[in-house]
Image (cartoon, rainbow over all chains, first blue to last red; front, side):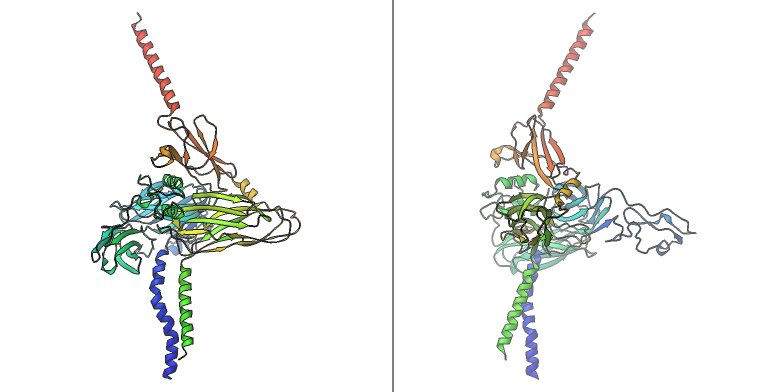
Length: 336
Length: 302
């Protein structure tokens, strides 16, 4: 009986053992992946999707009475929120039909960055507009009459301490005469290192901003180290990392956040640091080849000039040639 | 104890773990339609799509191979492409049966957003025509050196899975031959999007000469080509970056983006030391002097 139990136990124990041993490596592998909370809903397509209250004649079964009124006719506004003007608190009276769908094409981008952050909007890689987040980090951008089609939107936020986030990009299809709502955007946190070279055993201070009250996950690579922090009411977060956990070598750190409402961000910028050794020269860090503070078409032109040749500045990964990897790094740091 | 049995369980566990972890990070590029039947002479569109699973990508370098005795690439549409920076413009070699392109997505692409009503994962569209009348199957496949790079700031490769298409050539001729591309061209009445000409000069590139950078998108059939006109010169087909012929920067520079349906968008760059403006300023100054002289002359006249 004991031997039978032992056999059955071994059947389970071996996969569990290997699962436990390899899980951190799988988890580490997944630090390159991301899951986001951004959603798209189309207002004007005649059915409720995303966070819409209603869409055209689709009121989701809701009525004026259901919303606490005595009667009347509930209708839907062009922005897919309820139009309560036809609801009455006394006797019901007939009203017009529901609002016709808007003739204009709107795109609304809503989300959270950092308190008072300056937010650049890129459309198809080009800087289109700049807006400001409110004191709690909320922002709302409304675009009117874009040509219908596929758009690559990019958002880059600068926190109130001058640190810039990575450009957060997403694609969505814009259709004529409807409102496309892209909601629940959580901007990736900003991140900054106190210094880029530390002695083993020293503490390395990492800081940045995120939406107030967010949980910040900080990942150190290579390795399987990940730490957590919380952003305060001003959006500030920090972590003092004991580099005694690391061997001498070069490392990188990045962070992502989950807001108090459960929204998930993508990863922040990746920053490098050395433990008991310095970093390689950063002649043109971040693919800004002409050093004008922007990474745009001009830097792309410079990369094309050096294509399949070597240039100390443009060869971002220092593999001896300007190639596809360097182009990918340029795309990563693009600011428009 | 049956050690062989435990060994095989161990190996199986390891296989499952490694296999599953490998699939955690992978992108797929595939063609749509995956299967279809066509007659000789028909023109059809094949979409090249990407599925990033849980990854974020920013660069693709794609090669397609096809049988040149059966199919011919008529065109390539960048119209609804996810790529907004084209590193290598689409190039096709019908004699060899090859098509190549590379491009990037500034800031990366992490997959389709939930609720997105459209296909937002198109890399490009290939317009094929059937040139063979011999019935049978033909394949369009991705070349082995196709690459997709992660948006990780290091240029790391994503593990790539590719799925091609199989097309069947039917015998005879269609009574109503399809020409899917022609329909798209006829529907496109919209000009390419507005854009900007960026003028620069860097000591380290283009021998320190002034050059311009430009790029735009056409949401329907895609940009076909660009043309430039410097001052009174004729329009000529160019690509970005372009070294200016007029290095004095005293003439208006116009760049025209033309889409596949021949719709145009022209933007211009007016230099500060523009010769036309200088000329107008000169005429204006001369007129002021003449009027002033005349005024004083009349005043002195008794």
